[in-house]
Length: 132
Image (cartoon, rainbow, N blue to C red):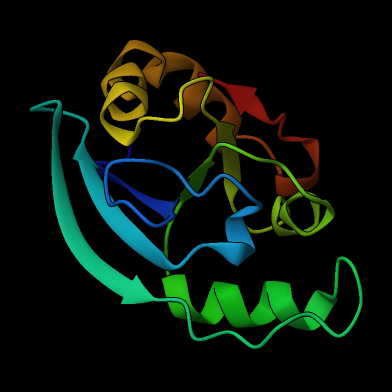
């Protein structure tokens, strides 16, 4: 069983609010670590989004660039879902927040941990996009 889950979040102009556009358009990314045993979240890193603009809508190069920035995470927690995030589902479990506020979404993470772990155990292509 896992001990930790790493979660990448796309942030907009304000650090407290998700990027209102697609995940790949975020100004920066926060990476949190959730300790399954202690149920504590810890901010590990903050990265500036240095990925180039898309050459075309849902550019696969954009998804690869964003993926290289956020590194080895287990989940992406976002507010808006675009075509590239569907593509990224092959590598990450995708969580969609109903709230624009990051703190509210992170508070929902422990409440949904059983479902999150259940989806993480599936083969990547079979994973559902979860709304929390």
